[in-house]
Structure formats: structure tokens, C-alpha cells
Image 1 (cartoon, helix red, strand yellow):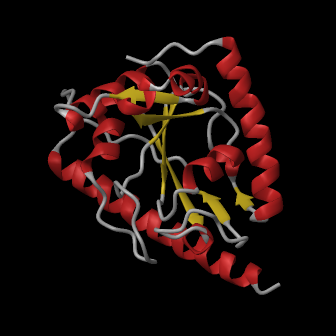
Image 2 (cartoon, rainbow, N blue to C red):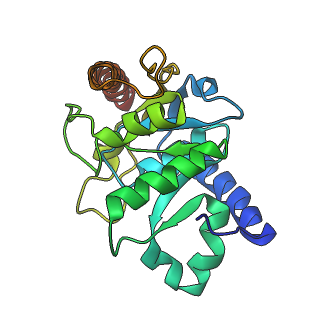
Length: 226
């Protein structure tokens, strides 16, 4: 279940988003394209590439609505995070047992509430220019919740803050929002989507993300020389 957010924590979110927006544009000179592809309301899975710990704050600063994300339940032990995270879109996840199933159930409920949920299709943070195989989570959620997926590529974030670095470099970052991909269609007269349809959907998402990521990295590389 989602922790309840207070007015104060929601106010903190608005304040921090404003700071992040100014900071990312000044420090990383972020270039964001097609951010209006994210619907103003309704359930949607935001599916970004993931190469840096900067990715979540970067995409949150450039999107047009509040994004929700899964956060480790251990973070909600400390009083500050218990108060702050729910207002910032954090959803507590108890990883002590059955973590994968619990994550999917919490994510599904978030989408059914008409929210925008951030799910990294490749799973944990990766490295390099190639998109890794798409995991089942995002595609399964799209089918189960009948939610569209919005692919997003973040170029340059790995150069700005690669693994093992705690302070970011002032590198150019490019965020390209793709077009909404409708959820996979169930079998005629059925409620479930066939495995072959899910596989085709996953392959299509992989191809779209790779094309977007290539473009984002190319633009980021060209901008950094200016």
C-alpha cells in the first residue's frame, strides 16, 4: 500500500522539483524534447533508459506531472523519509520476502489509481550504448493494467555521473521522450495477452528505446562540443 503523503511533504516535492529543474538546466544544460508526450493525467508507465543515479531526478525535473516510483522499504524507517518520500512519489516496498511479486502488485495498484509510474525496462542501472534485454516487469504491467508505455532515453547521464562517482560532472544531458505505445491487446474473447504478443511487444519496445537512446547520445555528444 502507498504511504499517505502530507500537505507538507507534497509542498516539499513542489519545492524540490523547482530546485531540480533550475539546477539541472544550469548545471547539466539539459535539453528535453517531446516531454508533452506524457499525458497530463491517467495511468501510464514511464520507461526510461538507466545509466546513472541522476536519471530519476533528471526525468522528474523535465516531466509535466508527478512520477511515482518504488523505494526500498528500509528508507521509510527514518522519520524524515517516512514524511518526505510519499509526497515525492515514493512507494515503500518491503524487500524482505517475495520482492518481485510484491513490486508488481504495488506497481499494478499504482497504475489502477491512474498514476504515472516509472519503471526501468532494463532493470537496474546499466552501462554502455546498447539497450539490454527488456525485463518482463514493464511489459507485464502494460498488459495487466492496460496501461500505455512512454519510452524515454536519457543521453549523457553516464558521462555526467557514472557508477562509483558521488559528485556529478557538468556534462550535457539530453532527454528524449518517445511516443506513447498502446498496451498489448489480449486474445480475441480473452482477458489475457498471449506470450507471443508479449514477446513482440517487448521486442518493439527494445527497438524503440535503442533508437531513442542512440539519438539522445548523438545529440548529447554534439552539444558538448559547442
